[in-house]
Image (cartoon, rainbow, N blue to C red; front, side, top):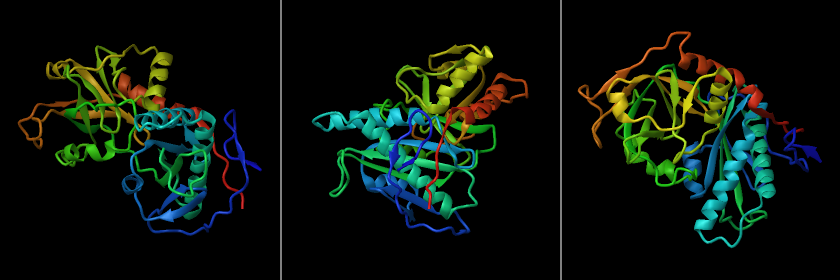
Length: 333
């Protein structure tokens, strides 16, 4: 037996013999782990989700050269909660057990990381897309759900600050990270200017709740404003709020309004996600609904000095990432 993840959440399992050998590729290959096996794949993360049907998913990242996973426990809790929420919607007879879900997710992620690092030795960090479906395929192992993990090279962080567009209504059920959202948002994505890194969503009160793949923040009078309810609570958001408390930066857990943006009250904004960490926003465009952005649309620019609250937060979040990560032990050959 061997330990897959060290620390309080360690579990053991027999060593799996995985068919992988060290090679160098001009471009990083993908790896998919499921049903106790990990293999190289041609599927990107979107195709991976699409072909496996609706399920609970989460996107994680490694740190330390692929040796750790950032905020692993939050990803495990999200997978467990969302899997059972979707299973309940489908009339599943009873909830899945936390220990079963946690163990299978961790082992599947470890399989994916191990083979990805063998296939792509030049890649520093890995992006992991974990999908849990409650309707397993025939032959899938107990306890009655299927756990799959897609591994890809973590994309480089976009040059800061970035551009975002304000468009689209908040999701119907943002508390559940449902793979269906990846496809529901495509109609809006088609309208977004290629120069924009993200688009953010607005609720019925005309307040900005979150991005399509990110959490969203505004700085107003030196205070960080971000939604508390009706959003997916991201792992980097959790770390950011910890940093704000540590650094004495006040926080208002309410979504900033579009009207306050239009009135010039904002001193800055940012988005956060697994791959982006905390990314300051330098340009916000407010296009007309269902139209491509035009030069005449309201546009706001922000600049950040080295000592500004947003620049400080971005640097402090980066500094804390390693301390919030869990060690992954690689496969032994």
